[in-house]
Amino acid sequence: MIADEIGAEMLLLPGYLLSDFAPSDFFTDATCVPEFDRRVQELIGEVRSVYSGKILISGSQTVYDFPGLADYVGTTTYDIGVPDLPGDAPFRALIGDYARRFADRVDRIHDRWGKPVVLYTVHAPSKPRAGDEFGRLSQAAAYEAMFREVAKRPYVAGTFSWAYDMIGASEFATDGVRGRTAESVPAKWYDLLASGV
Image 1: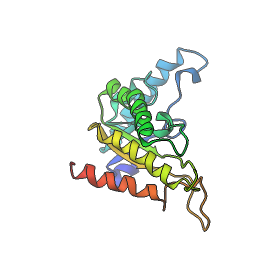
Image 2: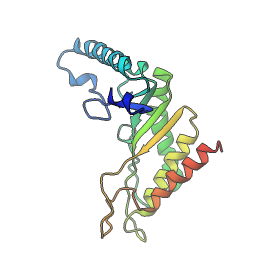
Image 3: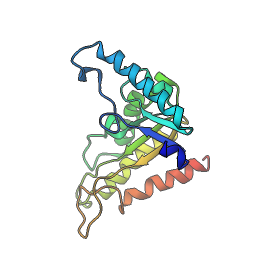
């Protein structure tokens, strides 16, 4: 009700891990899967009775039917995964790795429910290498490869950046995207995608 009162355009219905719902092997009894699915469908119906905006819900677990009741189906780079490549890997290797990951996860989620997909908790780790001790360039390259895959998919409706770590007085290789070279990559792609390029 509060989301509707404040005019929130979109509401994320979180799962048991905020960004995801329990996989089918989470349950000790297989009959729990359809029952859980039914109850989440009921929950979506109850939300719709008090909220008039759009609903975003995780579609990472394709065994369920309830994501089809949402307006947007989401997934994360934690579900998609990030390339396990060294910091000095060629850029074409990053592109190929993300192409496979998007085909396996993002395309499959869209094919399953036919809804626009939102990528939330988007991140890419830094990979230090000689001449780039904090992994700034490898992190920016990973973001670039990821957003090239986003740009190929008109059904991807948006992304939310994510970082656990704030930049402190000292920089570390484990720092998130804030204040780093990679932060400019999504900004560039948001401008490009918004302009229809």
